[in-house]
Length: 461
Ligand SMILES: [Zn+2]
Image 1 (spheres, rainbow, N blue to C red):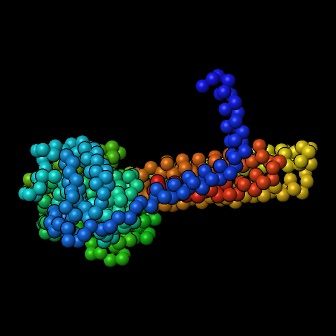
Image 2 (spheres, rainbow, N blue to C red; image 1 turned 90 degrees about the vertical axis):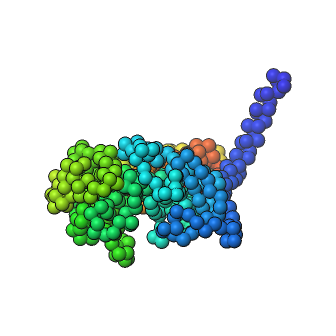
C-alpha cells in the first residue's frame, strides 16, 4: 500500500473507534462474560450404554462399578472410567505421573525394587468417576489404585487442578504405603500388630500432600479451639477407623485429619524430631518385611509410639507458638485502606473536575445536573466496587479451599477487578463527564466487571 494511505486509514479507524467505543465496550464486556460463563458449563454427553460396560476392575474391592472399556494407559497408571473423555483421562494420568514422581523422590522409594503389586497388576489403576458418586465425596485409595472424580465429572466434584492434585497426592501416599507393605491396611485384622494405625497412615498422607482437609493447626490457640469443640482426643490414640456417624463425619475433617497431620509434621520438622519422609517410607517397608508397626516406628523414628502418645500434648506445648501474627487480617486491612484511598482520591478529583466537565459551557459551576451526576457515579462505585471487593476478600478468607491450594489467582482476579472498576470511574470523570449519558454507564460497566470477576473466581476454584 502507498505511504499516504496509512495515516488516513489510522485516522479513519480511530474515529470509528471513538464513535463506537462506548457501545463496543458494553458489548465486549457482555460478550466476554458470556464466553466465560459458556466455558464453565461443559457440554453434556450421554452416559455410556450399560450393555457395553465391562464388569471387572481392581477397584471392585471397594466399589462394584463397571468401566466403559476404553482405559487410557500411561507409564505407571491405567485410567478407567464410566465415561470420562479421553482428554480428561489423559490429564488425570499426566497429573498422577507428575505427583507420583515427586512422591517417590521425597520418600526415597525405588518402585522397581521396593513395590509389591497384587499378583495380576503391574500399574496403578485410577478409576475416574464421571457419573458415579463416592459416598462422602472426595477420593479413595485401595491396594494398588485410586477412585477419584474425573476432570469432566458431572457430580459436582472440584476440577480445580490444585484441589485435585492435593487429593490425588493424599491417595497416592496410601497406595505407596500399600505397595511398600505388600498389603492394604483393611486386609490386616484389627488388633494385629502388623496393621498400620490410622493416625500414621492419614497423618502421613496429609503431611506429604499438604493437607486435603483444613491443614494442621499451627498455634496452641487453634489446638485449644479444636479441643473445646471436639474434646481432648489424642491423635496417636486413633488406631482404627471409627464407625461413621454424623459426629465422626464432622470430627474427621476438622479434628482427626488435621491433628494426625500435626503429629506427622512434628516427626518431620527439624524443630520437632527432624526425621524425613524417607524414614516414614522405611517404617512402611519394614512392615512389608513382617515387622510390627510399633517396632518399625521405634526403629526409624527414635521414639516409641506409646511414648509419643503419652507425651503428645506436652510436646505440642513446647513446639507450637501460642498465637500467630495475624498476617491475613493485616493484609485485608491494608487492602481496605487502599480501597478507601482510591475512593477518597476519586472523590477529591471528582469534586474539582466534575463541575467544569458537566457544564455545557465548560465553566466550573455546580449545577444540579453536575451534582446529580457526581453523586450517582460515586455511590454506584462505592456500592458495587467496594462492596464486592470486601465480599470477595471475605469469601476467600473463609472459604473451604485447602490450605496448600494457592489463593493467589483469586486475589489477583479481585485486584484486577478493583483496578478495572477504578479505571472505569477515572475514565468517566476524565474523558466523558460532560456527556451525562456516559456517567450513567458506570453502574452497568462496573456490574459487568463484577460478573466477569465472579465467573473467573468460580472457574479458578
Ligand atoms: Zn486418607
